[in-house]
Image (cartoon, rainbow, N blue to C red):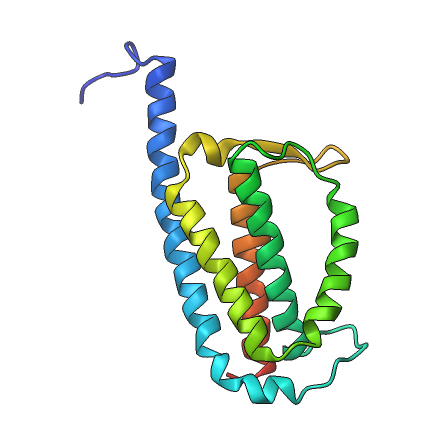
Length: 177
């Protein structure tokens, strides 16, 4: 085996990390595409979702979960987009979470088809952002307050993808799919 470490430079390391980020991008694209298909497959249950009341329960029903998905896919998609374009270097995330609840309440009053359309449109925009993002854009970071610093990739991976997976699973369980 050829020994490369003696000639390995900082540029080589950056190139190697960029290759890895490009591979991870493909995984994110695959994962988000599959999630969009799962969400889209639930669209036919819109009448069932519309028949559910808006509740004050601790656990959301399908109507409230779908509304939440429509809201956070837009919010975190915009955050990642703005970070990748160097349009945002800080955000008070805690105050935005309070606004999310207000927007979620409004979205829960919409027809399910509208929330499906919005969520799927948000997902499509985020997919396009991921596809066109450079490794440096994905490494762009922002201060979210209280010592929390995240990269655009962190936003895509955690509050977008993992969060979406969690709530689609919840939606499927609520709908007994």
